Image 1 (spheres, rainbow, N blue to C red):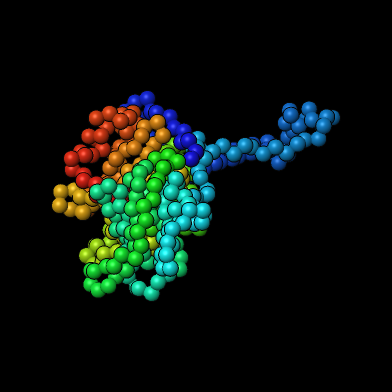
Image 2 (cartoon, rainbow, N blue to C red; image 1 turned 90 degrees about the vertical axis):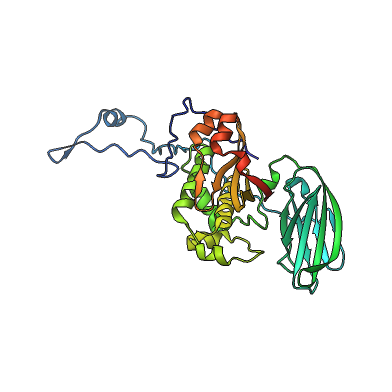
Length: 337
């Protein structure tokens, strides 16, 4: 993972300047000197009449972002070096060090569940694909995960079709939050990725990328109240569809933001949990030299909010910045993807 380079602001009151007019600019050529309809020779032109021919030299393109935008996203791969399974289930654990596992089901049962457990915490997913791998994150760090695949029998009753313990030692703690997965699903060709590249090109540092992504999403998406009232269990965001339609629920907002950030190699978590009794979504981001900033982008049930990045950049990981970004007692994380 490339290192993000950014400069701490000298004052907590300093504003971050977002340069949104493009990544680079060329200097306009000097205008010729015209007097009474006659072209005048410049001093440099006179000197060069008897010397070597002039050379055409283009101005250098100067990028605004000290960490150039990333244009290649990370792609999960079923390498086939570490596999488990039976006649119906295939698990590719070749790349668990990169924070993900891939599961494929080839049986005839229509409704399949995947459970990934570590300690007392269990993540439950629908397995939607057939004869193709789906990607699931190892979100809870190093340790032993138990993977189970279940086939629906009737109603909410399931029969276990497969179980396997998988030992995970991550290459680093950020790996699960840089790759696409079932909940944060993007690829090199995604419109969301291309928009993320465009937004990052005008940012000075990673804080600038986060702010540009946040501003774009909240300015261009509207909250879909009808969808929120009718959405069914098992819903998965389609980030390109959300971007095209310009609307979504909190899950869609978070998935789109996280997809754009990960495409720029900025570790980001899509977190779901509770604020009081309300089911809630927020985005945690990691900034090199600062650390994980929790609740940096959060949804209060009505609106998305962004903590002041200027204050965050000067406050580091102090108690003050944590209180400013959000009172942790108000947020109860359940899962992160």
